[in-house]
Image (tube, rainbow, N blue to C red):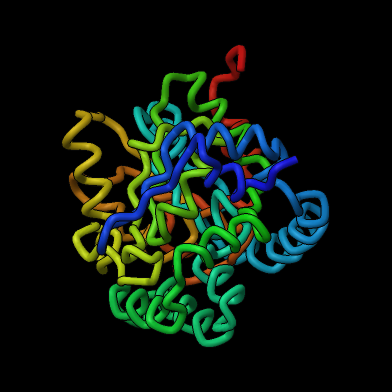
Length: 299
């Protein structure tokens, strides 16, 4: 059986890299990834489920008593059920890991980058500063990104596939809005049935030989407040009446503002960031909590 990366770079799906340009994985390449390894997004999920379940139980026990938003209000539930679109953060929400931390660890810069990630997610430093610092520590080549995806495929969070399936069945549009990198998110989106055009994320740039050449600073998610801008643009372009943001970090919380998200739901099942959870409209530890409040159609 071919590996996900060998399938992606097979003669049939040639991966071309133009000077100082980003790499978009074509839809056909994503099909090849799935065909090559149908268990791609959950390669480690069986072990992860037990660990995550135990962590969630501890978090719920410690945090539920001090969070007033564990039980949603009537208004919050009405907004959730009437949402035209839901935007998800990816790292530590849709996926169990922080993608940039995984890439950094794979490239030998794990500890230093993880410290910057914590600063970014808690809002103690501007996001663009943290992103630039982290990527400068890694400077991944195209081959390193590919090999990392092959050896450490993203691990999907328990319950997220069912939640997205339920949302889609209820004609709710789903988006992935991430400060991570598109090259590492597209396979996840494909597995979850989310169109690539519904991904708003940063983009790594590579030179003609696949060497690291920076990242696209024109993407809104490369800057502080970028997720709020991205969500506002989604709403404006698509004309949605009600939009919800779900995530775990300060950058996700920022998306709740006029013209952006009407509701911010903090998912604390992977990372419990107390300052973020305290300001959320609703804090959940399992995606089943959100599923149970939606109309159950024939999904």
